[in-house]
Image (tube, rainbow, N blue to C red; front, side, top):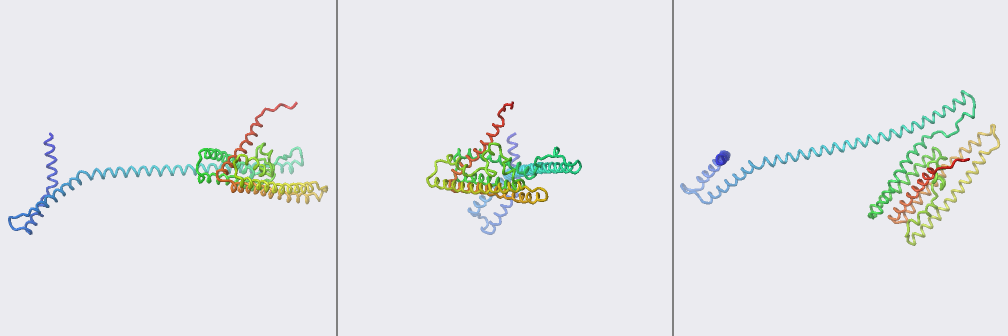
Length: 367
């Protein structure tokens, strides 16, 4: 069985190589006729001819036996790579479409909430007008609660997202400081934390135009935060007093610069507070005007105009807060600034937690 098989293979190979042999024999014969005299064959020519024939037979054998397998493996590998690339491209496209759908859904929910708030406000106004026009003036049926403001509703929603992002940044800063990463990576987190506070100041500026009393009274804050409220936010000098012990040790030049900064904050706060007192007195005089009748509207119109100054006071107070944060970041090192942002975020987080604990405390019934 084996001898027959090997004979069959040998016969096939001989049949395959036979035209090549005849071709090489023809070359020898021509060379013999041209280079040698009759009956004489040079040894070098014979050796060279046999060598060329062996090389051609070996090359032909490799081309016949080895090349198809290599080509087949290459084709399989190429098809596999193309299939993987197509699958990865499909996964990336599906993930991109999913993110777009999620973003569109969140945007739709926010728009629906704003539209609902606007409809509620329009409904209240229509109800009040109906009572005044159709049923006559009846103070007992009037609703003196403030109407829903779409600008304030948008601010409350944005502020909720802001608090969630601040909590995430606090956790990230805490983990990074414990991991002792280099200052280059830490600088990115510090800049993001500073920009996050600046974003809040921009949101407040827009909300103050919608309802300045809402921002001034701190209705967007918890009860514990409102206890420390100063013109719609924290008092910079008092916050420095809270943060400095958390930043120790400070170098002597840093101590001097922080002390000068706190003194400058106190002077600016005093100037703004005096301006607020003067504005309150002016408004009180306008509202307490003793002429009603035809002279009632002009003083009230002047009072409304004077209220526009409140928006300026809120913006100036937030500008002072922003400048205080910037100056502290210039005085401190990158790592100290990161510790300061962490302490600041934890401070506000504890105030919000204190409000929740206070609200959950049982109250005794009044007898």
